[in-house]
Image 1 (cartoon, one colour):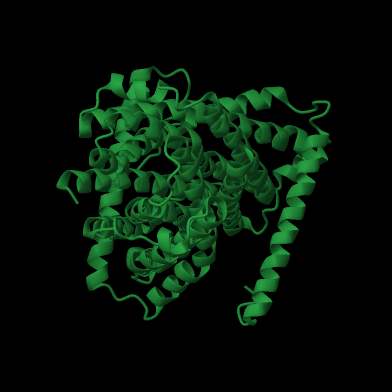
Image 2 (cartoon, rainbow over the protein chains, first blue to last red):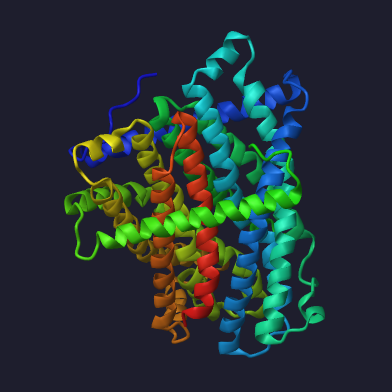
Length: 268
Length: 261
């Protein structure tokens, strides 16, 4: 396919709008196609043994400390900010922990965690695959009759599906702990009062798990798509990595909206 | 990595030394940037060009992010609001969440992905294709011509975008409130302007966004200039830059939440 000429400021709004729609449709088609091919090769493929475990190690082990750090900060910030706001209305902090626990399970743990994973893991996957594309290693794979989707995308997809869930649960636990410590130090909320999970019901857990799995699938598909589309030397690798971070983050925010709205409308 | 067989303690030590050296290099870069800012000795036309490119190109993702995240704030608050029958407080809750935390934080993460990563990729490509050395050979200071305009461009872009996305996120929240729990736009507006949200809440968010812009700008310029090793090197730099920016944003957010009133 021929690449379209770069946008210039002399084009009319209509031309820009049309190009946006065409690019968007084409991108959505390519993503769906990659997703379907990934699913097909998940069951039919013949990738080397251990490649999934290797990717799982890369994703899980190397992101765990980064996620624990950022989610730890988020836990402290949120408990502090919401307790300060609550204090302006009614200075009764006994329910802070319960509400925070519910919000963490259904929204913050999966979403903020996945946004962090998208920068860390998504950028890594796109950079790796894009470098292989521009140095023609992917063409060499095709020459050996090995489908790049089977060899490169499927292990990352499976590993991310499992490890996103694991890392999200781990980092949410860290965020809960740092939130409890903040509540204790800044607002004198005892740990046994804070550790109140009475508001966390089945619907919250189900929503949180659905989100984790959806994000775990979206990050590798978006990032590998951007990586495989790379062209044009080192500038192309940079562009692909940038695009991967943006696309995965957008996918997470849009998925979050639809899953949250869905679970609210279903009444979970 | 050379240390993959080293013991756990070795790796922690190596990580700390790495981090310290990166922070030191970033501080040196900051010093060199400030030195060229007082008095201003950088290319102003480049600054305007970057501002246009960075801000206009990021508009679509900022719009989408802001509208959706505003709506999500309401979706998450809706069960609580309905439980207590406190529809009048929805505007206050969403306003406070968006203005103080969600708006600045999510905008910073998206701008870091879109503009910061792009900047690292740009500078990294110039470094590995020896264009930066070319500039030096022509006696043009790469910092004055390339780095300083981008540095201020990113900070200004992020601050402006946060104002824009605060407004859009509140609009998205109002729309979601109307669609999900039937609260009229007017009721939502009254909740925001009812006196519980003060100017200092808006200022709190904007001060934080300027600080986020600073960390995104500094880390993206640093990792771009520190690129080595061809095409894979550019990819590695971009990844390191977005990771450093995200970590820095969360750390700064924590400290500023306590310090800024």
